[in-house]
Image 1 (spheres, rainbow, N blue to C red):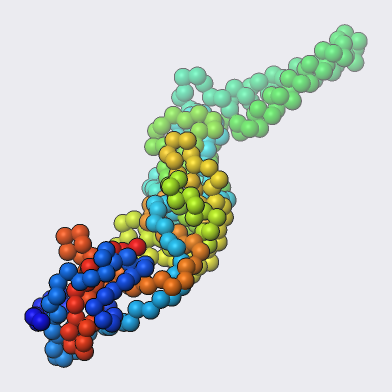
Image 2 (tube, rainbow, N blue to C red; image 1 turned 30 degrees about the vertical axis):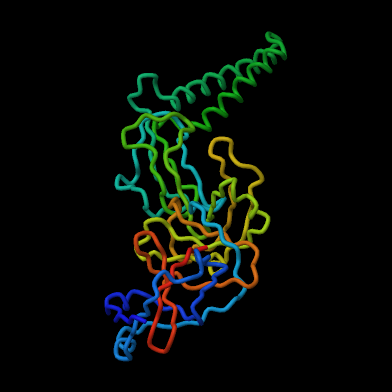
Amino acid sequence: MKRFLLPLSLLLTAALLAGCGHRHDDASAGASDGHAHADADILVPDAVMRQSGFAVETVRPAAFPEVVAVSGRVLPARGDEATVAATMAGIVTPAPASLAEGAAVTRGQTLFVVSAAGMADGNPAAAAAAELAAAQADYRRMEQLVADGLATARELDEARRRYETARATAASLGDSGQRRAVAAPLTGYVRELLVRSGDYVTAGQPLATVVQSRRLQLRADVPLRHQGILPRVAGASFRPAGAADGRVYDLDALGGRLLSRGRAGASDDFYVPVVFEFDNSAGLVPGSYAEVWLRGAPRAGVLSLPVSALTEEQGVLYVYVQTSSHSFRKQEVAAG
């Protein structure tokens, strides 16, 4: 049998998988044919094994949950997001001027000022104040006319309705100072600014969104071909896209809980949503996309190994099976 010395650079990157005999049947990893594609063992001297620091593990059948990999997104929890809307029409100015996405804000803090000064269609607040003054004067005059018998009760009721309507409109628009402050509805940070300084806005138009980050939601989009796992989903792990450390988060460790399983796919994308909620103790940013691994019911007798034990060459996966104390055989496998 031929023996080769495995290069140290490869030893430092390849984990070694222990096995026995010349056959490796992996019900979980799914070896393509169960036989090595090369009959040559790799000889690893003691000195190289000590310097490289690789580990050898014995693979035994054990319980392992079914897993489905899907895409998803980290979202704010319900009740932890609010929209800041204009309360009158006019020109909007951020307050302070340095307001930016990601800025921390407190409940009641002024975020925008809307001004109607110089508007071509006039100042709505001033117009409402003028209408209120006229309606109030007309109502008082009508009361005197009714007392003198010169007007009917019906005319008095109409004058009263006009006055009450004008008073409600003026109260909603504020005084005639032509400026209205818009405050943050909750304590958190600005997730998105929807207007720029100097934009014209109408009453009710969204200006920004403010979110809290104490609790977050993980929405997993399950393709319809995997909908069979939905009744058995018990947990999930996820990795935010673009994370520098590539860390995978387990919802169980973040106090996560399952909120809902979708009952039908959306007509336009053929995905069924599964939603979890969890504590944001890791400081994650809402709105980021994520890789999600949904965990279903456990299966017995599964052979599993760490992902770090796999090496890839031209799209083919291999592990290294120990054949003696100092020799290893390269074995092709197919990951499950």
